[in-house]
Length: 162
Image (cartoon, rainbow, N blue to C red; front, side, top):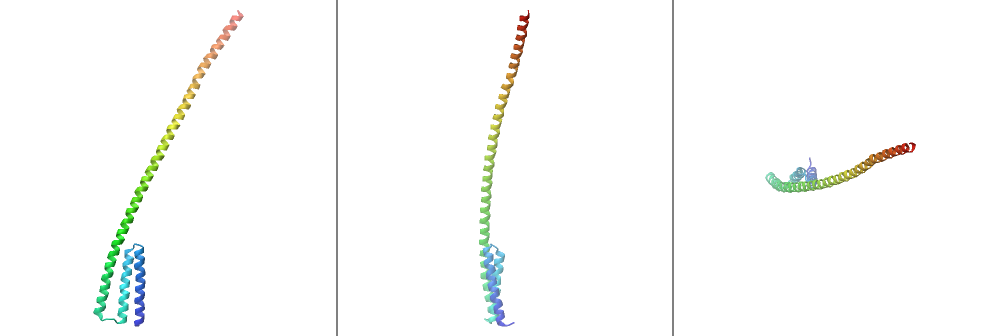
């Protein structure tokens, strides 16, 4: 393959690698980010080899240096990603606790409202029962009065007939 094509492939690997690195960083995906950095190092090595810069030892040394820098960068990125993930997890846990507390308070308020409604309904039913009892107590007195009146009428008629 020609030197130009090797350089083009190397530059393509550098660009695609950079895109993967940025995407991995943006999505907190350390694996994609690491793949991108590795692809950039490979692309740079390919470009240097195709250009015939330096002998084999110099190329290996250059690639190793870039790989070491990339390794440090990836480790730092993984550490930062871990911190961001932990922070997000802590925030979500706090939000869940707050939501749980809110729901608990809401449930408590609803339970208190239901209790108050039950007390009011019970009081209303007691009052209705009292009224019904008072009304029911009127009937025996009324019956007694009617019976007495009937007896008095009968006795009066009898006395009139005698």
